[in-house]
Image (cartoon, rainbow, N blue to C red):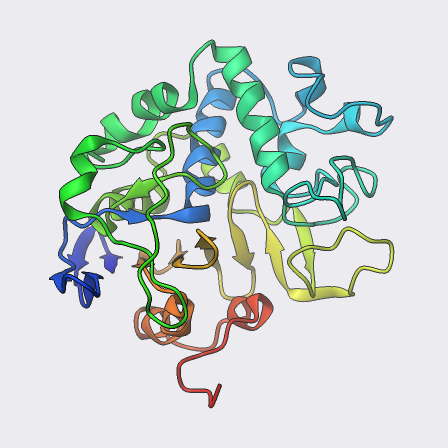
Length: 318
């Protein structure tokens, strides 16, 4: 766990990397950051917008038309739609939800890893750089994130957090060979705090872009995935920006992570007004149960995003 407050960072660690070995977590332990990958990639995309390499209105199909085939609505999906999860695509394709748009892009929010993957391929086509190279150039190196990567590195082997299921049984570690903008980031709490500090300070983005990516783009429904026409009603307390979830009334931004069959859980939240941010990385199925209590110690008061996500809190009987 790392807390950024008024420009300084405090890191604390607890627990074990592997319950079988008993090796303790420390500040250098590598964690699977899961969907905390998305805001970092979004920042890189917005740097490219500032540089004039693409725009929020750039259509993904102009660069990677083969990603979604035989769908008359797909050509209207833009960079902005993908960043705000308004592409109309499923989170991940399946037999129940084949890869296509389920509502007109831009109409509403529905969380979509597919949208981020299509955006990744578009960015790679425009820049001619693979994701890992691009993010190293735009974020890891400038921010001093020396132990972060979207692909598995041999140097992660000695001190990484192994995944644990609901019964605390250790499972095999997923070691991504291909960079995936939606979920493959491996990092430490210290490194991710460097990124959060950049978010709070506006580092790397034009001032207008820095404000825009944390401005509401689309309201959230009372469901993370809302593909069908009878999607739940709007949750007026929450919105999505261009890479972060937002609690507009609280002035906070957030993102959660849930990878490897739920055996890695992560959460990050920050407040521009208070110049405070926090990241929590865990390696167990019940990791999100402790996130609200930890986050609310740093940013006091209730946070509607935890109700929206629907994870059980540690204090509840379940």
